[in-house]
Length: 378
Image 1 (cartoon, rainbow, N blue to C red):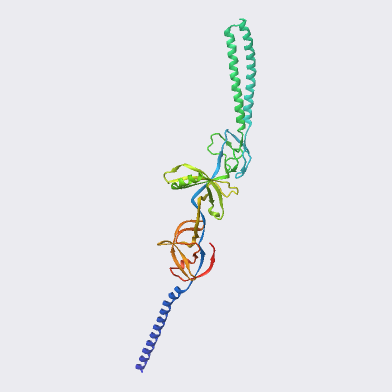
Image 2 (image 1 turned 180 degrees about the vertical axis):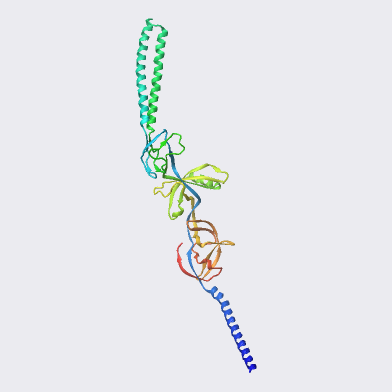
């Protein structure tokens, strides 16, 4: 009986092991067949035709927006601020009244200067009359020449005093005029650094307010010095156009003109400083802002262009996947001259009309099968 039991148990174990081995063998065969089926499956892709068109040849650099003109408003006299006639951040025009200082000390000084002038003018007139009388008397020898000379000297001295008084009156008027501070340009005010009641002095280091002229406005940027000869040559023929692209709103740009080339190359960086002027009518450019400046030199005719996302970079350089027939792709090495506004200018490796993959290329290899989902125009 025991012998029968052990024989039955052995048979069960043998059959179980065989079944398990068969299952593992089946799973192994299934796993090996999966990659083959995946490799044979077509990869869905989007393709775009390479186009041929004129493309601008331009230099790009990081630019900084600068105010067209900047002024720091300071007081030319010592006095108390009686009234502020604007709000900080407000637009002002040239000639607008900004501050009024206490005029009373300066009005009093002016009255005193005018009084001194009036007094000395009267004294001078009397001295002149006396000099005229003594001139007649000296001719008749009723008075000595020495007496006449003394009278004449007194009259001349009083004339000098009156001239000094006139200058004092004019200076007092100027000092009084400084009690009203006007804007010297049209622009936008910054932070207000004084309030009504503050005492301001002529030697204060801090300005009362700053004003920036922002229409028009400048963008300053630098380019490598090797481009300087071409820039100088082209600006001598026609003004060069510059685009200012704001990173936050790249879909819109400001158009301007190159208006300044610095007179010295920066020897530490090997670059030349340039400045472009923009109308900035919508005020999208703001002083201190960083932008992408694009200086257009000329147009490249008949350039072969594809979307920049079609170009991939590998160990052997840049390449694209070109559609061959309807269901396969070829890996093609290309030479990209530059990328501009999402478009790559291809110097070598592509012909106009050839279709390149712009979506799905990360799943592709040389000779991969593809299924074109849709086709877009470049």
